[in-house]
Amino acid sequence: MNLEFIKPTIRDIEDIQKLIEKDVQSGVLLARSNDEIAKNIRSYIIVKNSKNGELIGNVALQIHTAELGEVRSLFIKDSFRGQKIGKKLIDKITEEAKNLGLTQLLTLTYQKVFFEKLNFYEIQKTEISEHKIWEDCIKCKFYPNCDEVAMLKDI
Figure (cartoon, rainbow, N blue to C red):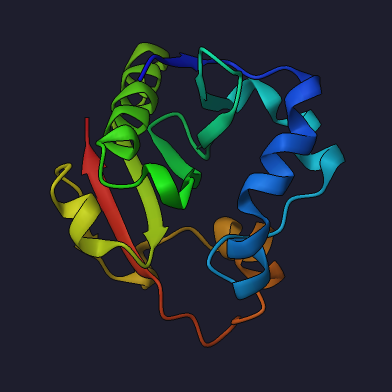
């Protein structure tokens, strides 16, 4: 399959929303409004089937400090999982983070094993900035009873 890893445009927002809808409803991913995605569109990388333009996956990089970025909204369409597309998206985000001068990547995830394979290691949630908690976590339907794993990667 011919895949293209690209920066999205505003025209991709609706497809991003549709792609992640199931995981947003279940609480695995945080809901992001169209306006929020538009405001942060430059932080996303998407992957499309270059033959038919089908959106297959996405990821975003949120910058928290001059050293720390966060992997957000990683999602791969069910029928394309297991093909290392998620790894490639994380590789692309990691490269972008390096180019920006970041030294660490954070993720909150239910996919601990996946991220461990990509050199992330578990940290205590108490090590995460309170700013992150009040900016994002408070929006989660599971807050304050979060069972995601906090993980960090040195880059």
